[in-house]
Length: 419
Image 1: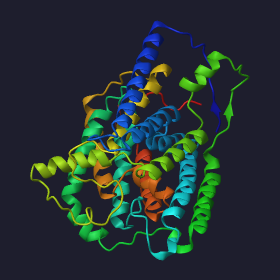
Image 2: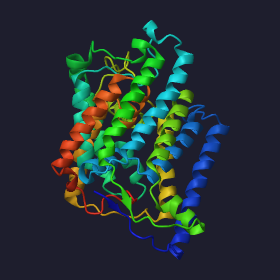
Image 3: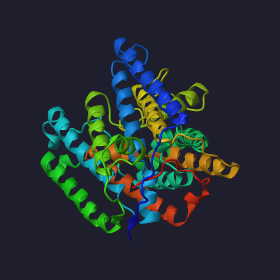
């Protein structure tokens, strides 16, 4: 199989480009102005001293997600539907880069990983049947809804209307997860081990082991890495630079490395990457205030790490991360003509809602999503990240083969992968 690349068309410049670029500049200015305000006030009452940093980390992620199409749904769809594994390398690289950074941080905070002291601020979760069930639900929900949670967050500002019912479903899914938590916790999670690879043989062994696994996966995925034909000669001029920066999909390796570096910065200064804490906390707060939940939830409030939902009365640093993702993604999409309204039908909206419910329930029971559990977990060298990732991958693969992703509306993937 080969990938044919169409000849590049002249980009030109229209009045609409002027408007889009101006709007993007305003959004960028708003984002930077908000970061300056949060920094100057130390985030008082608005997330604390790390609020500005996490807003900017979110902005960096929003740009990388949008320009590199770093969406687990898109990457898995390319693999299972098109037999194209190129996007998978972004995930592998982000795990590798983040893992090395985490190992350096761990070595200063927990000098002896074999002392039975596990970093409680990292996403190192129990491994049980509940984690597998959560991963399966999340993987199927991702395919049906047309995106992972992070994917919906960055594609909604692009005009992907189907993300609205999908995110509404995520909130409902979290509510269902809270209501079923006691059963899942007492039946599967209570007493389950939370294996941390460095505890077995130290940091060097754990890093080399995971690098070996990542390298093996990279070699295996080469069979789905088709050659690209038709690139031809290119002149590096202003139009080509504009095309590469705003129109062409950014290289997978560079995108993955950028995500990995931002993950290290986020963990070093605040907390591991994740996009569900603010959403789940808001859902839990509302349910608690409505009398639907007890103020104390066994396990969740006493020992489990992850994108844990707490009762909050303000925006958290994770909330600012989400704001950064959404603002920066639209600022990155506008100059490349990718921000446009994508129609949603009643049927596609209903399936997006249903898929979102599965996403939210899986993220609640699994203590996070593909960013918080899979990415941050594997970077922390936790077995839970690999188990959740495998469950999501297998479930998504079966769902793609069954054609469940075709329940979405035509043209549901704005700015899809471009060679």
